[in-house]
Length: 415
Ligand SMILES: Cc1ncc(COP(=O)(O)O)c(C=O)c1O
Image (cartoon, rainbow, N blue to C red; front, top):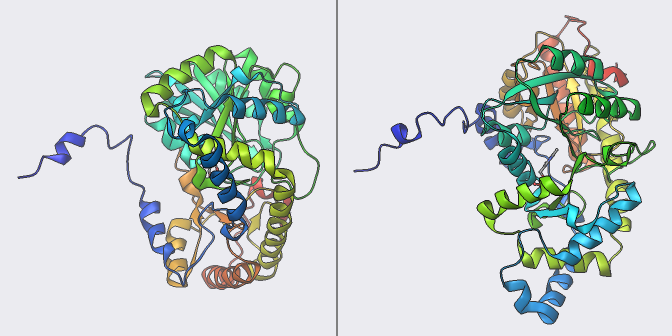
């Protein structure tokens, strides 16, 4: 006799539903499938030996402390180092304004817990990072999606959405640099506009920035906290994309009142982030040149991005368009209106190639003809082969028809 799990879970399905797309993507883990679906860094670039040396050193020099319970806020020397290093990006923060989290995914969860009372709303980009949507959806907010173009979130559209909203927004959430999923970077002008809007509507602004350091070309755009009047913005960072995601080490920079609330929520969630990992990452940063390591990542990822853009140009039908990211891990495709990319994925998997259908990143059922491609994980050879397969499938699907339908996000490159 088991427990009646169906009845026990009744009412929570909406908040914790398994996604049909995720189930479909499970098959893409097969070794013969070329997957552009994940958001994984290239594992061959993990500095495994240097990280092992750091863990060894921590065990030798402060093993017992690293194995003891630690403060919820995080290891103070790591918070201090982050505060100091962030100033190079124009982010001014005291160590007390830095909270160490178990990946930035935990920071999203904690923000949901402390900022989303029942019946609130959240301003988001459309499309938006699916993991943030999952974290926020546990609190059942109303979503206020805002259109994007090749310069990022359209501020005037945000203003219109806010004016029309029936519920005051608890916060605005943006991945402003090399966005997951679109690869788009918000211009400085738009950032200033959104910051102004956040003050006008008394709506905290949360910038999630896992990819900002991975710039291959173009000019850096300052984070919100580095803009005039931006020192009350919330900034989320992580070592997942610059060092290794398995370390589960992220951080939040925020005003003290918000940090205090998040500390309470974190205490309830996991007491503190892995002490050993915190000390090892601090040690790594003190004994290695992280910036040089990131430069190497950028060289490899730039080559892979170029391989992908070049393959898309050669193999995709002329009615398809895509974004040209200046960094990060993703590009975003828009296909003719009549293509449903969830259906396309079924056929693609049969041809041993995978992507994430774009509808996963929208809260309003739109984006059915869009998809996300990752270029950091597959090698240039796999990228060429995978895009050849995808191109052949699309060419067959679209045969002689030319559906026109151009997408706004793809303003940067079409063919
Ligand atoms: C925009 C964004 N935020 C947060 C995360 C989660 O990162 P972490 O590994 O630090 O939890 C990801 C991971 O892909 C991401 O793309």
